[in-house]
Amino acid sequence: MRKKKQEKILLEKVFIEKPIAEGRCLAHYQDRVILVEGNVAPQDIADLEVFKKKSNYWLARAVRIHEASPFRQEPFCRHYGVCGGCKWQHLQYEKQLEQKQQEVVDALERIAKVAFPEVKPIIASQKTQFYRNKLEFTFSNNRWLSAEEIATGQVFEKNALGFHIPERFDKIIDIETCYLQEELSNQIRNRLKDFARKQNFSFYDLKNHRGFLRNLVIRNTNTGEWLVLVIFAENNQPAIEQTMQFLQNSFPQITSLQYAINQKKNDSYHDLEIQFFAGKPYITATMEDLQFRISPKSFYQTNSEQAYRLYCVARDFAELQGNEVVYDLYTGTGTIANFIANKAKKVVGIEYVPEAIEDAKINSDINKISNTEFFAGDIKDLLNENFVQKHGKPDVIITDPPRAGMHENVVRTILKLAPTKIVYVSCNPATQARDVAILAEKYEITAVQPVDMFPHTYHVENVLQLIRRY
Image (cartoon, rainbow, N blue to C red; front, side, top):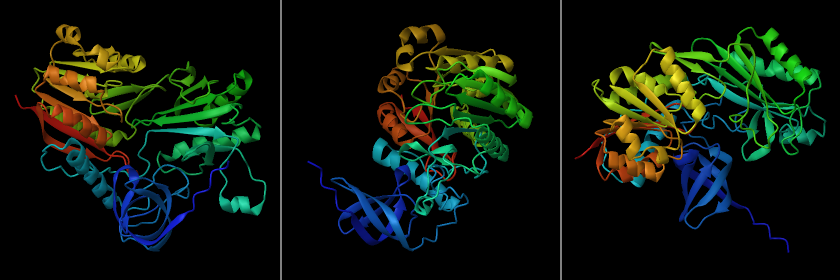
């Protein structure tokens, strides 16, 4: 028996109150809490269509704006509203910063439920466009078509090179101009797409897992170097050679040109063998007097300028005097570890990705840093009593985990190690606050510094300084 289709509920002329976590806004309708997704701003008056009912709130999206918020601005990208990125383009940057700071406060108050000092003003990004140093694009033979295009009944170019439509793994929006990375990125993507169309190379079929061209990764650094990685789904060497030669001839600015062949069902390339084609096998970024090598699989903060400000905050919060043993958890490619090494006696970096640890060691070597040690493994397993006896008890722990935060066992181990100071760098204030609620057994928050790494998104980075009470 077919399930009865739920009748749509339209809420008319609802006042949008304020932004909340995960890019949503809060509203009330009669006695209902409404969480609003999509293109709304605080102080809009909008008609809302409810698409999901929960026991204590409803989820809705705006279908009409009756009165526009004074905090609105005109989006700068023609792909806004369809592409899944830069969802806050319609919101003035000052208001974005205000909301991000408030998200940090809300997480500490409602989740951690601990005392904390006045939050320092969020560090704004000096660049709000062209600030990223890495983008990943997908080739598809099933371009997303707008309702207007479909209504014409015409046959359109179906191949696309761009980003996934939100919640549609099989639909790719063809990107003409992206405002996230410097202009050369747009030129490389568009020229490669045109070349592939003229050669009749097949774009990837995301449903049936067929096709020649699959993904494109473009990275650049503050030294002016560019790395391009093309991922093919078929091992057609003549066509691969033709494609890579086209890029080499067309863009002398590319300093590292590489490719991989991915015949799996998923797009991850970190387990693939990367094939070197031209230039150098890496690109180099600088931070103060340090150099960092970036290979196709390397992790490096995608907003270079803000990463520097973030690491300066972490270094300042660590308050190192030169005689401390520092543990850098989730060290990645050792960026923070190497950045603070000249202020510490020894820095021990731990990371679960072995390739990242190899990059971390190389970064220490090229910068002639001799007081770092790096180890690969699951931190909850590696960080035990034997490890500490061998490498020294930490005076300071710096931790920069992924969005999921730290495993509870890691948090408990930190409590047992009881360093004098913890510097907690997080890209998710909610999971950071969850972990801090456990650390509050021995620690108090003494400084809070939000940093905006990703303008026009709801994401915010936050750094906490925690001091042991006893």
